[in-house]
Image 1: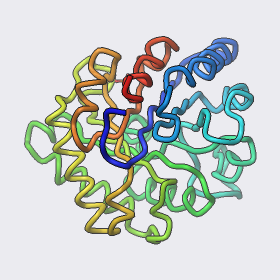
Image 2 (image 1 turned 45 degrees about the vertical axis):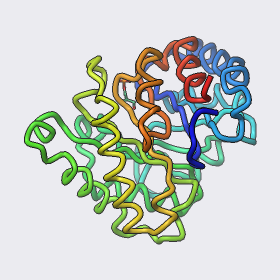
Image 3 (image 1 turned 60 degrees about the vertical axis):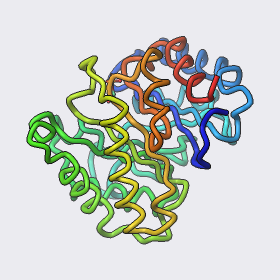
Image 4 (image 1 turned 30 degrees about the horizontal axis):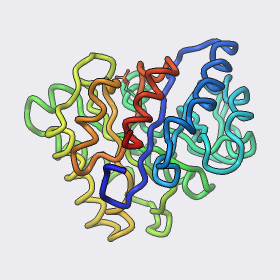
Length: 264
Ligand code: 13P
């Protein structure tokens, strides 16, 4: 192991709106088959997840049996468990289907589907109360970065998202992902120093707000992560793994990133 802190590392592939069912099944199987050798001796420190579309989650369930081997995430989740909310899927339904967790607040949901910080707060509260594993995404657009307001912006996203979250729900079931919007799908990665500074600000705020439980949460980086840049990003002290988009659509490149996160 090359990393020195005690936090769990996560590498999660966000497949977004990609893959038909036969392709999703093949990719889930390839990731599941390659995972153990990519993780190697770091089994207790590195968790690997995939986030297929809702329609393909059931295909991946057999490759993600109970236990820590492969974690299965939805890309979104409703803000209510049950009821008259046409088109929605709640956290308890995901758990019932064999899904471990959900990504909440991805910038593509905020940008293209107008999800607000308040919507995300309701989803986060409902998911954590139901016992779902959560990856909460935060991150700033380019104009905010250029105006050097990025830390203020991200801390404001956090303070709204956590406004009503009971402190006892701040546990290992919560993972954060910093994804600067200008780095998503653009080939432009935040430098390790830029990402690390933001992760440090996020960790400091979580610590001030929730004490040690907040401070010790894993914080992932997302935005054009590739096998070629993963090691440099992971060398930064506050980066605990990755939420990977494009490079997770190919099993070999995703598993290369997992191997790097496992220290090999
Ligand atoms: P890319 O890795 O394709 O930039 O996507 C990042 C992302 O949005 C993961 O959630």
